Length: 279
Image 1 (cartoon, one colour):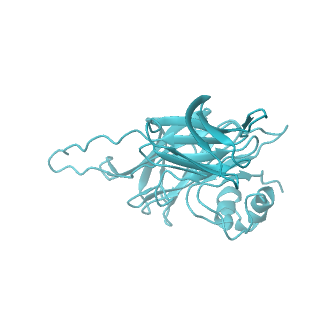
Image 2: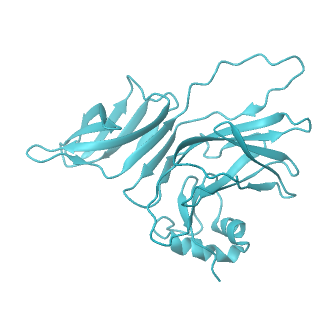
Image 3: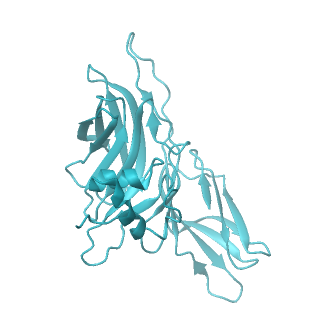
């Protein structure tokens, strides 16, 4: 378990052998120590100094007297946002776009398979600013990305990746929009920015979502996509968006049984494998 604030201060907890010493590494560098209790439970605080802004890869190393150290196979990837700039005074008569407040994103990365979002960059789990909202973001093994969301029906939404405009779309009558940037996303950390444009072309709502395209081992011939759910949705709607037919949600359920214990309950931040449609 890890909870990391926007200021980089963190609480990390786990289990080890009873009374084992625990060392937390950030990219191989020791940053904190702790010790498990008689039940093997431990909690480590990262307060002074906190984690700096940017991406961090955290591992726990368990030290047991008389044995070789054991390093956790799972990695906690944390993306700490940069400090918010001081507010500026808008020009007379000009309205500043509503901007979402960012939190730290925390992912749990297993040795193989898909990562799981432990902590959303949005406090409510819903990346949202005014009516502008991200629903899902997925990519295939080549980095080809699809982004979906909602806005006021008919509104124009523009997507930026690392401050570069990559796609633009319009919300339909139901408020849903979908974009597929032409250029693939490379592995590593990125920032997705979305602007809802007013009639004069200026942004009237804006949100930013830091994310990391993780390297996921694929089996030979695997052409499945990885879907990051960043808003509470349901399998029927996801299947309808990807296959055109909601009843095909059973394909997604079957491919992700280890994550979906109840097909009626999926959670923001889960990462699903999306099989090819087939017949």
